Length: 429
Image 1 (cartoon, rainbow, N blue to C red):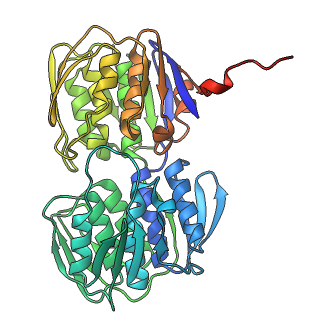
Image 2 (cartoon, rainbow, N blue to C red; image 1 turned 60 degrees about the vertical axis):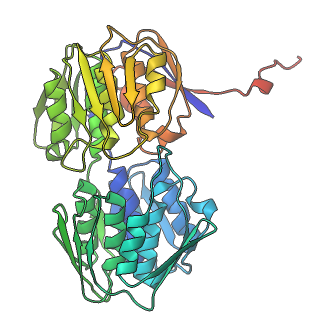
């Protein structure tokens, strides 16, 4: 096991290159099952969630050929199973996308309930309802989701609540269903659009992704393709906040500025300078911040996956800031770690009130989940003194080479192996 050690108060300056989008990758990789052919995926992030998805496909019989660090060829002709046991899903929330993909391919799927970050109850009832409306019979027994149908038929599906995961899963199941599927009140996140573009590159007929209504005309067969994944909106936003938090000047490259508009707007509101270019943004800050209120919303609103990172900035903003979490019920677990570092925060349900303090102080903390871990890194970069972060396995799930990227712009951060208590005694010589 490893932990991160950060010596704070170093101003970040330079350039950071953004990797491919984690949330797009973990949907597109299962989608290759639908082609029963060879797909070449480019601009993949080199992160543990992607590696885990490769392992699952390989155990199902797929041939995964690593071309280079960011490119892979996946041959799903040889897949011979629609059953995914718990050992294969326990580390990965996105493993539930295999249900939609396998339903689309085999009209049946048996997949263990997913793992991943733990920040509250994350039911998949909307996914199940969507599968049922497409004609599948779905049961949950012994923590296994069992879905099967004679064949899937297009349907009109209204989402009671905007759900990225359910929208993606229904898209995967519907692309080869008979007839027309209409998903109303659909999620509009950039990685939904990316998945739709990938499916269309394989020969699907998906229209309206990025709007409230997605229409899918089912096709009989899909084929392989070559596809490059979009840049990671959340990784870019994380480094934007890190640059601002340290009073830095950082050019963040390989981004789609349109995807970052809600993040840019809040940084501007806090007094940070953000300049947009065609495929880059430059963040310049003097380290002094105005108060700001943030409410997470489905896209194009402020992303829930950026809430912890932005909250760190507000711990030292002048005045009182309020953060409202409208997507997940229990995403403020990380506040306890910020308080250890000197933050003044009060949490009441889904609302957190931040009273700005002059500075944070380094302390031993942990990563409660992926984005909370990113927030702890930003807090450590801001804080006076040394911060040590444990449970960094969560951070490795979603950020490629983050230690190297931060060191290249001036951060004092490194990994350190955690020696178990029983192994700390010196050996006799």
